[in-house]
Image 1 (cartoon, rainbow, N blue to C red):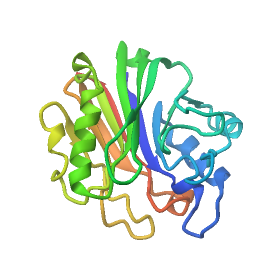
Image 2 (tube, rainbow, N blue to C red; image 1 turned 60 degrees about the vertical axis):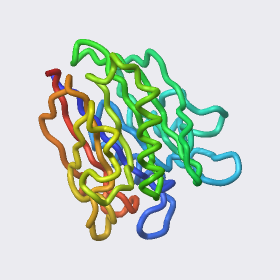
Image 3 (spheres, rainbow, N blue to C red; image 1 turned 60 degrees about the horizontal axis):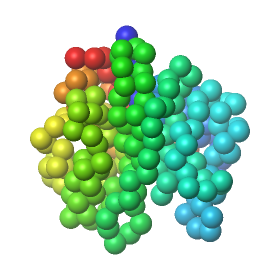
Image 4 (cartoon, helix red, strand yellow; image 1 turned 135 degrees about the vertical axis):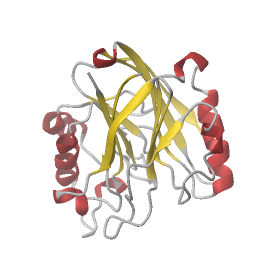
Amino acid sequence: MALRVATWNIRKAVGLDRRRDPSRVLSVIAGLGADIIALQEADLRLGPRRAALPRTQLEAETGMRVVALADNDVSLGSHGNALLVAPGLTVRHAARIPLPGLEPRGAVIAEIDVPALGGAVHVVGTHLGLLRRWRRLQLATILEHLPEDAVARGLILGDFNEWHAMRGLEALESGFSVLAPGRSFHAARPVAALDRIAHGPGLLPLSAGVERHGPARIASDHLPVWAEFSPR
């Protein structure tokens, strides 16, 4: 009875060989075996922000569904943040969270019913800014959008862009523990644990890690990270 989650900055499906290869990214997603996945840079940056991964191909090759978060017909998410859920999970509610900062940033949140946990979890996917002062404000904004009674079973997944173990993440100390499953950036030579998973006290981490095998090594400049939880 466990929930497996993952987060991955896919860099618009451009790999270390500078090729945009959605099929390669989708093969990694399928191999993660996760129930919920948060993606960052899932949409192209310019123009109408078209999805970097074709939606129909994504659902056909991974079996996962895209949570309805985009405000247009061509993106997978908002500000490149997308959430994927496995069959058997029901999305009760989903919303976009605008974040403060000099550079365009955002987050997405969904309440997802997880039968294995006997109830719902609130999952946030985000890609925090490059400057620490903005990361602090962005995390505070995310917490403002997370219902107080949802913190115990809350999850914040994403590219935190923080090189320090906890500095810049102080806003999470009152209700969350932060997992850094391992060094995930740069994929060619991982030196920093930028990709993290924060969880509330109602979720017990069972295991966590970094996916370093096969195409994950070259599909993006980040490696995917994952964790498994049971109810506490």
